[in-house]
Image 1 (cartoon, rainbow, N blue to C red):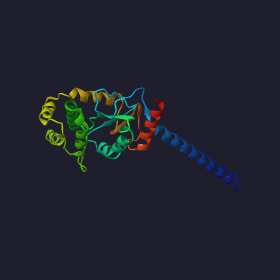
Image 2: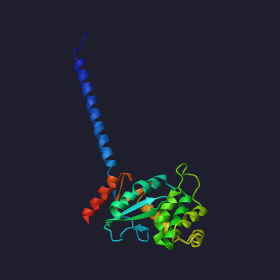
Image 3: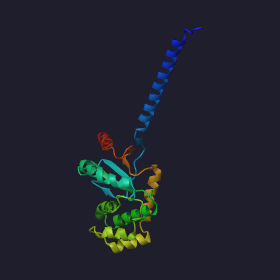
Image 4: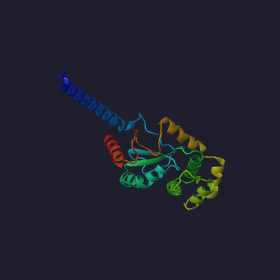
Length: 225
């Protein structure tokens, strides 16, 4: 006997499938929207004693949590950082600080210790040394062991204003390890999971390579100032 309800049942099934797909898409879109939201803390990382570029009275603070062994940090420094400096640091709107992250072990620690030692010896020489050390990171096989005291002293010898003998002594004596440890405490406090991590005041940027997102966060902070 022919079932006259079959076409109706088929339509109902198709309708239910379509509704289920729509619901699934809505859930996915909502989840994506939530994941793209920037994370906001109740305070910004302290930059007291940190290497800071720009006017210390600038109304907005941008912090990079970075690792000298991190290839993405090198790429960020080459592609995003110069634009940030040109647009906001040089114009007096932003001050920029770098906080060391030790995600790549002993070499990260050695590089950070060296950078902190350079900063202690001559703050004016820090940023040139910072840039030069990142430049030494291999473009291929960045995990190879390249951060050594010898390499650090070689880099430092090319930067004016650094006494390499004093730097060698500082590295060997771990004289600035407390500063490195302070950075590690900030990494833990702000739950930094990736490098580079960029914060604009209290806001952690979802994608550090999204310069438009960085600009928006800065501009919003300037409007609130």
